Amino acid sequence: MPKANVMLTDAHHEQAKGLYFVGHGDGGPCVIVPRSSLTRYWGVFDEDGESCADSHSHYQEAIDASGALFRVGDDDVFVLHEEAGTSFVPSDGGGYLVRWVGAKSAAAVLGVALTQKYRPLELRRWRVPAGGLVLLHGTVDGRTVTKAVDAAAAKGSSRPSKGEPFLIIDLPAGEYAVDDLEASEFDGDVKHPDGSTERVMVRAFRLRRVGDYGQKPRPGSGAGGTKEPKGERGSEKRAGAKAKPSTGGTLPSAEEAASKLEYVETLGGLEKLWSAEPPPPPKSTWKDGAAVALEHVSLRASGAAPPVLSLGAALAYLGGTPKQRRAKEWDYETPEVVRPLVKSVAEQVTNHFFDRDRQERLLPLLPRILASRSGGPSYAAAGQLAMSWYVTVGTPYWLELAGLESEADEWRKRSAPTSFAELAALRPLLDECRAKLDAERPKELPDASGGPAARSAAILFQRSGACSAWILSNVWQNAMLGGTDDERASTDDLPDDAYSARTDLAALGKIAATRVATARAREYRTPKKSSDAAKRQFTSVLLHDLAPLARGTSVDAIGLLEKLLP
Image 1: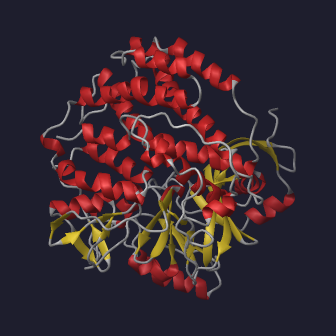
Image 2: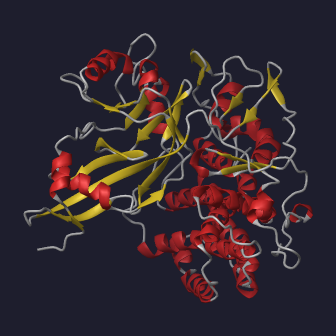
């Protein structure tokens, strides 16, 4: 008999009797909509109740949502992307979204969700208004179930007596942090009180109330000063110059440094920082005399000038294809003149750069992005840009900053691989560098500093070029297998050693970047608190302090994007 990972109790069986699951086997995502906005969520239908093309529907917005949240009107809608039946279990200060992936009993699913460890999901806070929530399949028109929801609530029930399935979730108004299972998906055995075992697969999210509904993201304590945090001296360094962490002097605390910053958390947990004076508005104007300001999060606009738009909406706006189909919302289609590969890379760039970089460097590229189908490198040549960046630019840059100067020089001497065999031939050098980084791994920092150091390193590494290079390395692999811009090749003939070499090559620079960020984190006194807020604040400090390093490579993520444009 297999060893059980979870031991169930009679209490689990009793509590599971009241669970009602929505979405099991229906395909596509389920959504959780505020009851107050239920009539404004239309699923796969339009304003008139007619079935509409997926590209114009709320359902398609749910599928395309980056992360788990998108907006309908002024409210957040939570998206459950993976196909699985979902129920809700309340708890003190929040509750659990329990997801039945594979199991014979609800008790087993519940027992796993309530006993496993969780980790914070990198997601902005979920703002839940008064009135509770409704869980339903993403294709459903909220207007068609409103009466049934009201009738069930009047009877004190959370589920329908018949018709379209839904579940009323009685969650108090507030801002909620969302945690995911530490293992993302539990796949193991549970043991029932009668001694029998059951193999189950379960996903779950834990909701923690962290603030009132009316609260908005707050700036770091004291947003007044004009000085920048200690260590922000690298902005004057020329591109490509070696930047080393500073040492000596009186070390500021994370709290002291953060008091000089304004902090705003955006979708995906990425930080957007300004110094005391925010950047000036963009000078470029192209249409109707209105400047376009790019934001990482889509902020819906109606007649506001200038409109504040996501990258996709800005391209549609400039390309002349926006459709203002619903009040206070922009609906858009990406113009056909935009090359899909270019749009994918550009979206990653917007997700990983500070607001100032987006406005000053990405915004002027929009006209060229709109013309990207008319020119630019071939599909295979676009993929080769990634290999050149990894081998001759990004990897040696971060290795050198981490102290492996001779290894960095060795990488620069290598030629970018042009075949799977040449990629696999990089394995000895990959293993040698990885072993040296592991051997020189510093003593672990306290969690309050170690987490921010790793988080800062990941963001900086992506900004320095990796977020563009990884997409292009997938293009390189597809091109090697015979794929094209419009067709994905089968991976049946992909050599295992080549795939592992590609992923390890992508990871090597990130490991080196983590060493650099850890060294800088040691220059600060460890934050006294290890709360999530303190960690986010310290992450902001390190990102602001280390920001020049992301611009130190000769070709960063925006530079790679520019190489794709005509």
